[in-house]
Image (cartoon, rainbow over all chains, first blue to last red; front, side, top):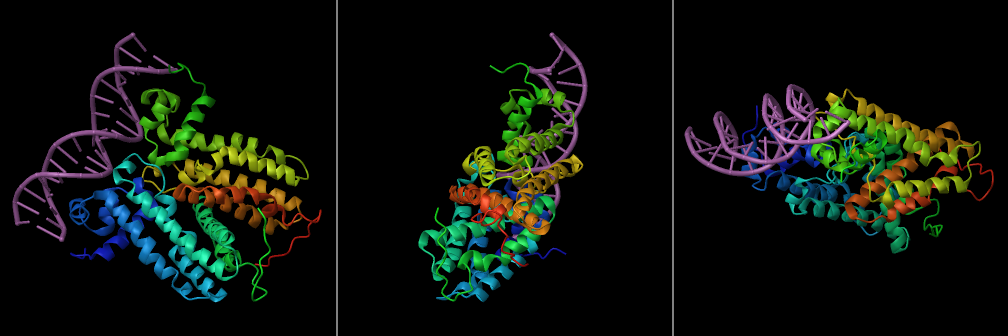
Length: 204
Length: 204
DNA sequence: GTCTATACGACGATAGAC
DNA sequence: GTCTATCGTCGTATAGAC
């Protein structure tokens, strides 16, 4: 029933699911144990640092390998609208149309045991956010935005997605999430009517 | 030192602060006790339903009285840009420039003890979100948007704020929050250059 | 490398004195 | 209406058999 030996990647995948829906404090070792099929003590064998280490590794994995996969379509000099749309489809799948929360949200609440992690989790979250911002800002830059404007567009596009995930969790309505994804190309690249859009400077 | 008798409103104010930063599960009775200056058992005297009741009352209070106060400037037939800007200032104060999280976010994570609340908290959160959406949609409608478009604009504006709060928590940067607030008038009312803006229908 | 068993503290919640 | 004292449970974490 339980695969006796689960390799590290598969293990992290299972743990990720729990942390995404429950957050750090909400994810108990019992939850993590039943999700992986491993007893609590076995989890400590794999992760001597306990829950904090599990959380940190989960966030790092999603922020590195996970984001590499999602943003692969952007990996060339001049990303197109189609490339951004492909990223949108990846994100829609990753968030299950908005039904699954984001680690940046659920893992970033303050916690007592938080200090015990030595800020490792918080650092991993911040690094993940920065990578995401830079990936999106790169698209905006390629489309002709100034560095500052590119970063602003990237942050706003990410905020639209994160906020839509919150709304979905509260109202059950995923329409805002779908719109945030659909808006992604114009949000990052500006009005894509003209090929080399010269941006309408939104002063302020 | 501890005011012996704290009235219900003041009590809820203190509790609100804890739930906002810690979420439901993260807010322990010890936290709530020290924030209010009341012993755990005294809290149970005031709230026989325990933590679940405290949470539900906190959410309802913020969603009713709190939102009434914040959205007061919109309480007439034809809200102006200045009115929306006033709401923006209220929200900036309420969220302390983005440094304090939103109950819609922190209280909406799934939880084991969640079922014990009988869905009371979840219902209060959903009701609060609906009230917020309707308040913003009213502005968009007054500005000439169709009902569907008004609701979409309202949701997107709220998502921008909620997402910016998440970003701020992770990166420490409040710029996205400031932009979300600054964008509020145009996000809801459209391009306000022409007095009776006839919206650019964003099909979809 | 997984398991059973257990330590020990913090949790939410209650009883009863004042 | 507040307090002290306590209950039972579940939390994280560890020890040691297999």
